View 1 (cartoon, helix red, strand yellow):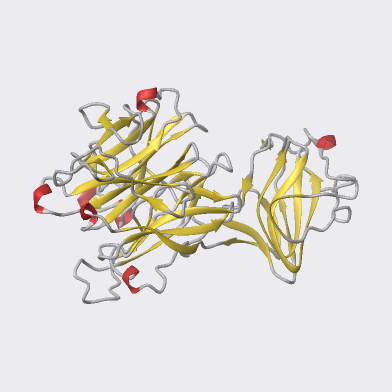
View 2: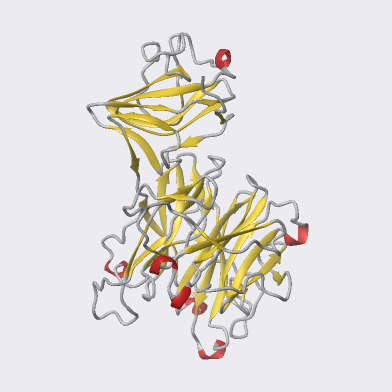
Length: 452
């Protein structure tokens, strides 16, 4: 008898790794790539003329909010050539830069600036922790050389240091870091640049990513390198780490992969190397799966993305419609036309369980669930189909829930409900350890969950 099965309750489950699949036959997991959309934020203000970068996006009370770095590089601000600006949107597509009247630039407060230093590479988040107060509803980190400082804010516009001392001083911290409150584990999490090892080298000779945790955002655990198992080591810059809220317990990263030895444009004045963006997932926030070594986002046909540090994923993921999530990436890095590009992806659509025209099937390992209906995020062709069999832990079909009992599903739904000849109510088998057997033909299944 199988014992100690995972209880998934009504939580949505993704196929970002092999965690759920016990048996594949004619199916495979497939990585899906976002689609390039419009330039969301471009350089059009005097304080942005050097470049823009290090953007973080958040949804707060129906408004999409963004903070981003401005590299103005003008003599009158030589002491700190990097500011932080603010933009907002009601749809994640059209962004405006409001005149905040908060800080002075060249004698005027008619700007969207929220931070002028000291320190830079400002990275904020909305604090959902037990220690959050009304006057510290937002938290952030900034870096100054090899030190990181903590900030707090009531409104995301007016910021103050939480304390005079840094919260980290064991750099390097030369790229944007990612802090957030993890309510799944009840702790703050901090991802940052990999630590230099002996002889000045990085982990395994490559740039890497570290993580620390805290209960109060002041006292932190020692920084620890993330783990990617047996996957080949590559130079990984900014982590762009997020919790995927639609699937509790799922952590995602979109590092910018750097290939320093490639020089597609010998006349580029800023250095060698090219970048793309990769996809990584984790179930504990420290050990990351790299099933997919290919790029999640390629530089594409724009030649200004094919140079040193030309492409980065920024921090944050927004639900811009029921069917679509949006990311924002910096393109054309260090070029005068640098911008933040929106990338759109099907909701839950990072990785699918997929089969072609010949068809195939896959069966999960056993688990316990709550809820009364089985919901799928799936897509088929006109000739494709999805059928589902619910089995006991010993691989035997449960009466009334076999493949032959299942009504074929075809179409394209984010939240489609499976039914059998006897209906779709699963309350009679709640509390039993079960497996799901998927039959697919020219179809993809991106996620499943049992809903109330």
